[in-house]
Length: 81
Image (cartoon, rainbow, N blue to C red; front, side):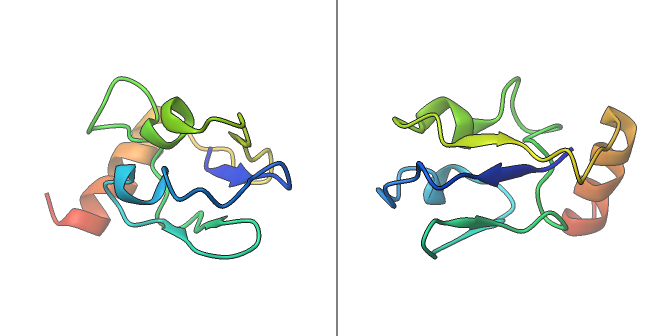
């Protein structure tokens, strides 16, 4: 499942450098590309954007449900590993 950023986002930018896939882009609120979001599976034990968001504005996107295996495959597709 990818994440989405809610309207509670203050556009502080803390999440941008945390994403290993560069899935987050500036906007109002910031936007997470579901084709690039792997929930940090294969990189970290928890989603880094969620862990640094002071507003708790990053939530799971129910429109993009994926298993851990699917997220690992997406990571391989993005990074060629």
